Length: 490
Image 1 (tube, helix red, strand yellow):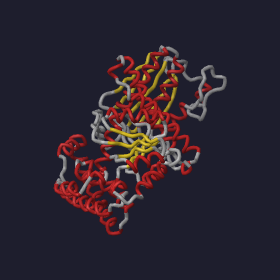
Image 2 (cartoon, helix red, strand yellow):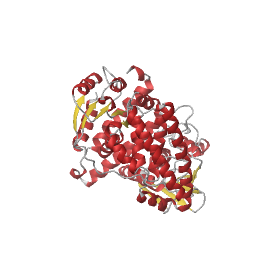
Image 3 (tube, helix red, strand yellow):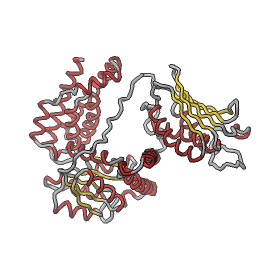
Image 4 (cartoon, one colour):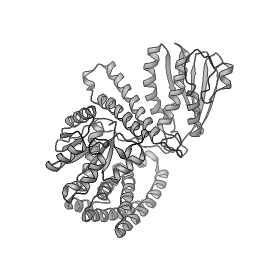
């Protein structure tokens, strides 16, 4: 694909495609057909592959202005992340004859100004070093919090400890003494140190009183005491038996993985192996949604997107979803600008994830919402799901809720003005940006009807159906006014 011809772009695509085959194959394994021991190994393999996916996304999305952090500022549940890390390292330690343990205080607060990828990188590097040098000894990770401002994480081992020469080179790039018996790059402590400092913490290393190495880190905690609500777990498989899907994908492995997922979800499908074949299928047969790779022979996914959106019939508004291994933001922007309703990134996290994503694009697309549905939404557009709302109050507390509602009110007023201006000026870019923000703001406080309408408007902003777009915009503006009235009454 000539538009994405840079070496780094092609490398990111191929790495993500290869990982897609691994994750996709793992997700298709029926856990009921394997032993408990094998099942645990598969779960660990999947956890490691998912973390690798996140690190690849970070690596290929970094520029000179970005830091090592992928999602700086979002609190991290340290207890949950340590449980994942411990599960993976326990197996490796057992295989090497090392006694590995993790000791965590209860009721740990969240980490501040961090992200889970960086936290994993720090801890994994420290455990990896200790495991390498302890040689059938003990490796322990302990985490304590004494109601102060910092969480203390300590990694200890029963290895030889740091030599005098090693102590002089601690935390330096490739800082390891020459002629060291155990092989290594000398990058582990350097990476950990750099990340910890970027996260606002401190790191130190010393030899233990009874031998071995001790590395101690202090992380700042989230002082707002805001608990991030857990993401909803959607392991239930949605029913796609009423959908016919066109899959445009040239990689045979990915074809197998995705079609097996679609089959499990009950969807019917056709496979196109390149862009030309995809358009032939699209022109002569009827589908409900198209999943298309971006890197394809003869015609690229971007060309397919543009040709379909340029049509002058109802098919031009069909949900088109990019199924792509391109992870850099510039690629995502180009895909959406070409007319995609959205992106499902490779590797796909699992069958349920794919199914819910497809349903989300079906429910949020302009083609799936007709005039009657729009009118029905308008009747209840500002309704708040009180179960979601009250659950949020219980999680974050009345004081934090008051602060949140104040921010929501400001955001909604801004979005309302932007949507009105976009309608007057015919600015589809502004309408798309405002509706995109509205999706998350409405969803945050349980305005589910408004959230669905904003999803539909966001999709409609990418089409040529001005009548439906205008109707949805007016519905969203009305909904914002109703939600603002609800917020004011609180």
